[in-house]
Image 1 (cartoon, rainbow, N blue to C red):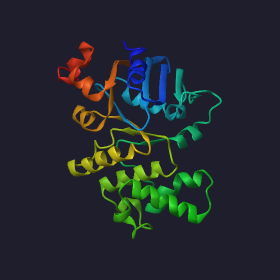
Image 2 (cartoon, helix red, strand yellow):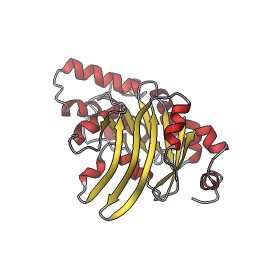
Image 3 (tube, one colour):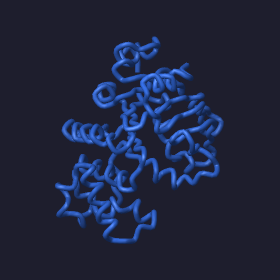
Image 4 (cartoon, rainbow, N blue to C red):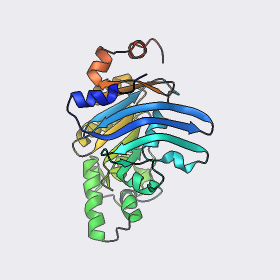
Length: 266
């Protein structure tokens, strides 16, 4: 499968990789579910991970903010480099700090049982930010960046559960943005939303790439085609192909990729 092609692609088009996966394998216990994966994540771009269910997309995504560390018996081999320097999988790296630099938005909205304000302020509190004026400013900025401020500015003390599903997902995005992350991971963030809320989230992600790098897992090839600048196709734990989205969909280099994007399997 693909090894150096992904790196060569980003070099050829002159893009800086915000993160780079290098020969990454991952094990649930003794079961190897990622197999020597290589992937660049170009800075200030949207990169989509596509592939059939069970191919390793979400497993790879969760490696980026060390969520697998929460469960015993999991093991990484290889590296994920941030800015070409820091291996965030290194044993000397604090996973909490990784999660501050790399935020995640999950498949279903998961607001905390707190007020709208305190949901967004949560990461700032964890970091020890106590100055109210700073927290106020960052909460407002995050809500504005998530296109939610105008809808909730007079309701900040209400429970987050009072918001609609689409609003809750934008609140989760605001919470992810509040700590000024360098990379945001989205795990099928619109699969539980209606078409209007889905469009709002997609429009939001398209605008956010000006300030943050985005890596998204999506089950929808149409969404990947609409939203992403780059797409990576995975199959059975391997990286099959990575390229600019238009090229990967219209001129795939591998038969497996062609069969998948044309709907022959998956």
